[in-house]
Image (cartoon, rainbow, N blue to C red; front, side, top):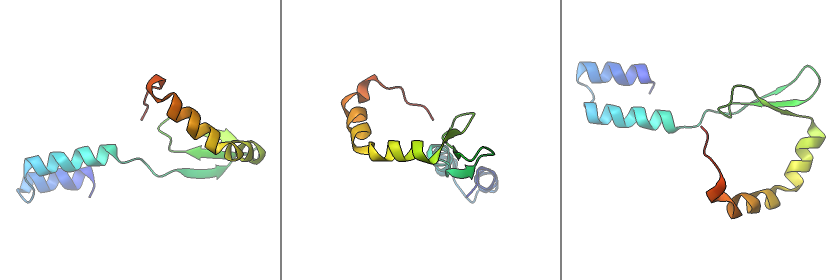
Amino acid sequence: MTEREIQSAMETGALSIADGLALMRELKTEQPALKLKVSEKGALSVYGLTTKFPVTLYPNQWERIFAQIDGIRSFIEQHKTEFSVKG
């Protein structure tokens, strides 16, 4: 259900205001789907990370990150109180 559909249902009485507001909050907390694109220079761009610009790396750079994913996750867990939350 889209925000517009929720508003319409609330206006017609098909949905209570409390339920409609709860659905809208839920919509806003859902993360957008990631979109992948090959850039003009042959890199992989990832869109939808709630930033203005995509994250763009070449395949070999992504592979280096993937090879270190356990270390990255461990680092994030060890330092989670130091991070800001974005998007």
